[in-house]
Length: 279
Image (cartoon, rainbow, N blue to C red; front, side, top):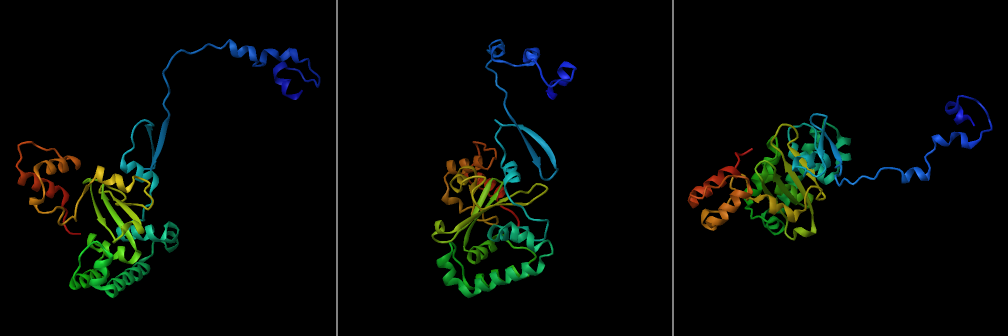
């Protein structure tokens, strides 16, 4: 047998099998193996490829992944561009393949899409929009927003309602750094798709797109992030909150809460953390 040549240092076609028993692993050998009494277990290690550095990072499987790690591993991103928020929502609606088909030279497509959104917003009008969206708009405000989406280099947070109306969707914007989130919803929102945009202010990708609750369920977001009205006016008037509520909200966003602070001081501290200058 040819496979025994190296074992016995001789070439022959017929062989007494007993001559190679010392090379075999048989049933009796199993019972002679030492039995380990140690209860220690070896925990598996997960290797994560960081898309920003292309370096592998080994982490223990028992360690909870951060939101940013989960976003890097599971969610879509857009190329570096002038208006990443717009293109993130374009991918959410039309898919990554359509975005890649268009390519990086996409200025004409962007203007056509924004014009269609603007026209749709003006045609619907304030009365109809107020019945479709969970926001109250005046006629002048509708015209202003429809004009801005066409003339500004990138969309503002307030313009997300224009996208809700055109794409017939709900939008959650989750700010990972501030630990707050905003919602742009339609009436009867449960009947429409919901797109979650995770915002990251660190170097690298500013937005990740989640269209099917890959990072967390919508019902879990309020447990980990504080809902705010908008970046320019994050909170209701101070009279709407109790001191204990403000303290809980401050702790939720990760700020230290001194027990001696008065209600107004707590309110200002929280508002300054949540607010952000106009884009």
